[in-house]
Image (cartoon, rainbow, N blue to C red; front, top):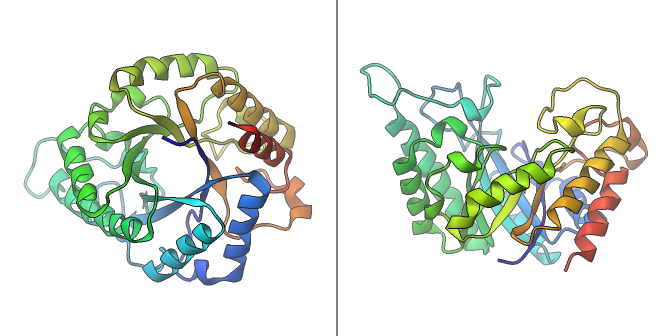
Length: 310
């Protein structure tokens, strides 16, 4: 598999957002400023609460199909390769990792089979778009930790995606969960979220390598990143961490992550988190404490790594 020099784009976009010129301007800057060769279009469908069995991917909380296709075509016109990533959020704010149901069907309780039926329809819809637009990779879910034990259903999801899409298929498990997915045999590429502490990369990469080696499949970090605030480099997955703005700490995190991963030839890239579809003014970057890298020192670290990687 070609090395993925990627960035996630468009997270939490609403209907009409991709039609605004600022969104295309932002995508063009993503390519120019980071040296990315891939863009991951991450979509956020909604279910009302963790035990809902209906996933809504048609409301105003999603870009519609036509504008998504137009943005994919625009990305490709810039020379970017494209990845489709339909994922799910919970409307009440619960993290998607906690979507869960009884393993034993109980009358009057929500059931796994109903949730997976809705989820499969959602994935197939975007698999069709990924096929029609020539996306290089399809990510059939992200950080659905409590669902991952349902191996038979996940194999059925992947098989259903393949009915509509002929390219490579992966699933993005969460940090530390690589060894708990028992159905990696069903996908073409293994991927996880690389939110590991700045001082623990070697340990975590040693662990992951042992887990994935028997599958003999490519691996990449479908997500990885760090907010620009003090303390975040040690808990980069914690977007709620309270800390002072610290651009240098974010920069150091990227330097360390790239240095450690560059020594491992089994790592086949990154889908960094994340590049906003509406950018702040560059002269205000020093006031931003999020995962954004636009106008921050970390942006230059990323560009140097991507442009120099062979």
